[in-house]
Length: 418
Image 1 (cartoon, helix red, strand yellow):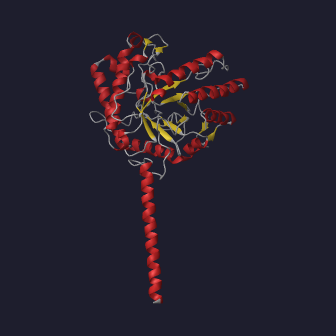
Image 2 (cartoon, helix red, strand yellow):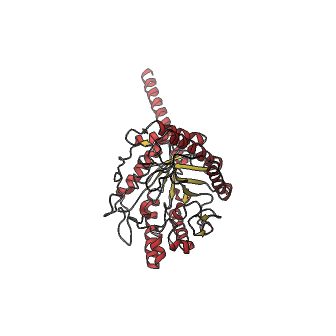
Image 3 (cartoon, helix red, strand yellow):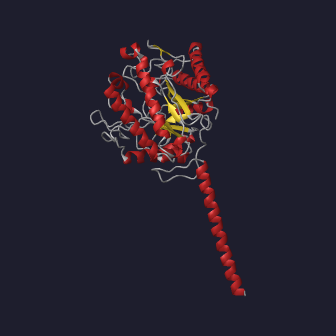
């Protein structure tokens, strides 16, 4: 009986261990499913996920991984290459460092040019998809929500998503539209099992090269904005049809050149095209409440953004400048936020070129005020860090590049209410 008792105890112990493993495994699977686990091309999904977006809940302030996956090798072959513009290969440590600064969102601009096959299939390179998925995985591991897009594919110099060409002739428009739809279908299918932490942005700053100054746009802005509306609708339809979590994934839409007046219903383009915002239309969507609008904000040029490659003033903070911010962000609140449509400022400054004490003091004041007003109006600001003039994160050490950069990050996060 003593020997039987010992054997019985061993059997019971092993059964308990097996039971615990089964229960724990079930819990992990349940946790992964409820948090929108990663599948698709990554294959190395962590168990936990950042808080999913729910009317922008879980996100307050973000950072752009600019001039990395969107960089292009040269003007001749026009192939997107990660290190082409001088930034190092993206690492897990870098995204961990971004999270450590207090950010909860990273926008990962992606250029697909040079990684897309010829017509009629326009096959996207699996190598490119896997690398994008790897970087998305770094961000997710760090606890960040993620935006990926189609970035310098709209470039006049080395892109193909050219609204000016599409507006110039029906054959051009049909070819570009076909390619655009097929590329997005492949991206969406690859990432179909990724959870709500991953947001797709339809395009970047699509415009005809004049940024609103061209005669074609000023004469008839509706023509080009209608094409952007059509492309946004195609993007929506193809993503939703791609299966998996795409049926309810958050999708993000800019208007012409990602300009704020081109997306606001009462927007009047500042360069002479007149009423333009009224032409922008959000796509019809089979998913309810899963759309985000976006714009870029670099005002005023010369302080928040270089003018002809340099800053022209170290001064900011007049009442008129503050009033301009107040009025613009309030318009977005009325037009979208109050209607439960989240708004993300997908890129914004201020550029990190101030060198004087007064310039850096005013830069911090700008961050505190503008990012604070974004928070007050329910907008989510995302700083444009390109590793160059706007660079504040040292991408080799995964830390702020200097004390002013660290103070700037702290000001952004504090203004966002974190």
